[in-house]
Amino acid sequence: MIKSKNSILQLELLFNYQMLNFNRLNFFPLKNKLSSSEIPKLIQDYVIDYEITDIFDIIDISSIDYKKSNSILFLKKNSILKDINLEFLLIITDNENHYKNIVFKNKILISNHNKVYNSLLHKIFFNEDKLDFPDDFIIKEGSHISKFAKIDDSAVIQKNCVIGRGVEIGKNVLIKHNTVIKNSIISDNTIICENCTIGSTGFGFDLKKMGSTHLAPQLGIVYIDENVFIGSNCTIDRGKIDFTYVGKNSMLDNLIHIAHNVILGPNACLAAQIGISGSVKIGKNLICGGQTGFAGHLNIGDNVKIAAKSGVTKNIKNNSTIAGFPATDIKLWRQKIINERKNRYKQNTRSSSS
Image: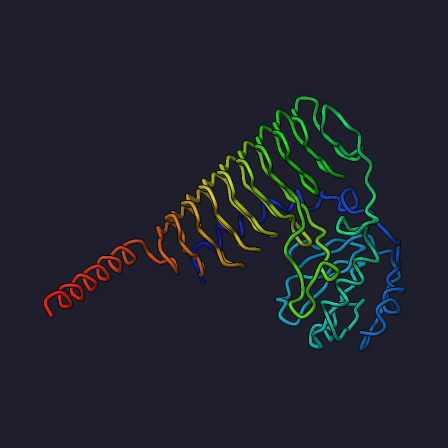
């Protein structure tokens, strides 16, 4: 267990208020209003067993961390159960042990998680990766602005931008030329530079079924907190179900990619060409050199410093300074470099003497 876990959990708690007030339908409208009793029939090819005690409308999707009434919660075989006692919640799982849990009153046991997830959510919600996604734009000073976006009067949007359905832009925000923002909440005093794409589709699919027709629905958002600077040509993917988050007072250089479900804590400073894989959770005060890569699903603690061109492949404790590939404590990395140079020098000396 890494020491940074408590800090990261506290960071996640800050989002509870935002998530409870995040209305998915503002971004992804209902395509079909279905009741819990209709779901087993829609996915009957994959249903092994089911039990529906309550009849209720399905208008949302839940995750393990954020559960909502009148929604579906998908539980994979490897899902770790947390407190689940919400009413009007339909559990869909491929795990027989989860299915047998007596707490669950409304549940379906299925044979193929990915196929059910993809097909069912495409039936319930409009998805912007489909041709029938409903939006309506007005052209304002050379930019296309959705009629369903909420933009504060003090915000400035420069030319050739696209602001999509449901987007909320706060006070004194500056969006520079040629930037696309969709499925996002942009908080006060944020600057987003030229040619950025915020809220685009996450890289989620089944390796056994690849191609654009098999993309997993990405129905979350991006939440950019206050006083954030985002340099040119950055991309930030929206969450799969919940959100991708960039913390207050963070500074992002040019050409940075942040994948879906990433939590980047406050006061982060990221140099150019950094790539953060999906579901990485990062504490406060990160300083990271350019061209660094993060593997997915890692926990990075508070006050971490990472040298340029590092490859982060494991969890990192609070107050660590790391470097290299795979990234390790910087003192060990430096000693390794010194030893390698000494060995090369010895080999060269032997070669020249022979």
